[in-house]
Length: 122
Image (cartoon, rainbow, N blue to C red):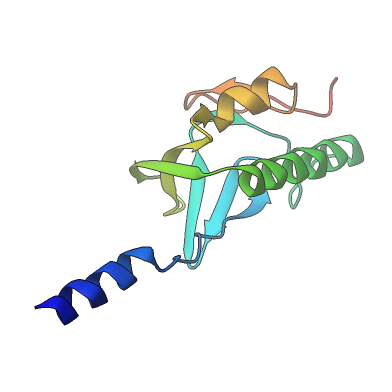
């Protein structure tokens, strides 16, 4: 019995590798094979940008998102799938909503499912 308790205690004390999240762009992340679309925001495109300004802003947003993901504990609240089969989710770092951070810093716009607005006309 003592041996089982010791093994259990060691298992609980052993650090588990943190989940790694990669920013695909400013509003999509990947973890293993799961692609997660962050709800509540829209960022400029990187892969299908309509102009060089949009692409540049998109890379800036993606870089910031990656730094946020690397900075603190990440929590994902899944809420279904979108038409591209990505997981829809609210994403939090250190308890703060990532969409709110990105919008506040001017790297994203609020978006709750409405048609995307262009990024090249600004």
